[in-house]
Image 1 (cartoon, rainbow, N blue to C red):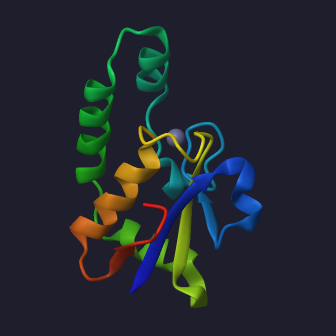
Image 2: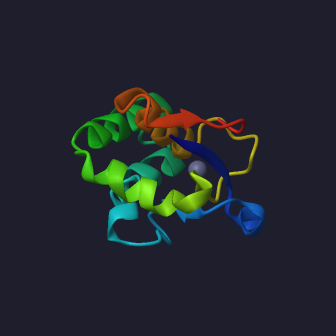
Length: 119
Ligand SMILES: [Zn+2]
């Protein structure tokens, strides 16, 4: 079983196996599959999209992913069996997509993934 945590990018040096899943600086091509699209990010910033719409689009994007993404995250978790999803949002921002991504893994592939204390 893999434990998924999340944290702010500026603290990620203290995180176990940090994985950047932001549009701006995602770790790799697969990590980008877990990143929101630029136009959604800008839409929320500009006020042309609300957070509810943003969540809906993001969850739709996640449901298109197959089990390869689970294998990928498990590999990132390494022998520590822990992966930390990283974003620029502060730790107290519950509207961060990392929470949605973490819960997606937990709900889609039980009991492969479990939410850590930060989720
Ligand atoms: Zn975020």
